[in-house]
Length: 66
Image (cartoon, rainbow, N blue to C red; front, side, top):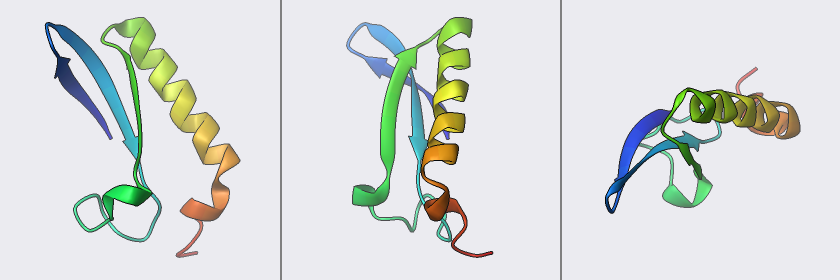
């Protein structure tokens, strides 16, 4: 998940990932991973790179239902 987040007077891009098989609302907060990036095109590209890295590094979390 990517979302716009206000931090004080600053705006950030928040990235949240969580393991399958549950959706965001049903996943316990302790299993969600959050990371913030600059709210810009460069920040978006960094967020996408981070999500792809997490997918490769934590494949066991995403392959639960296969």
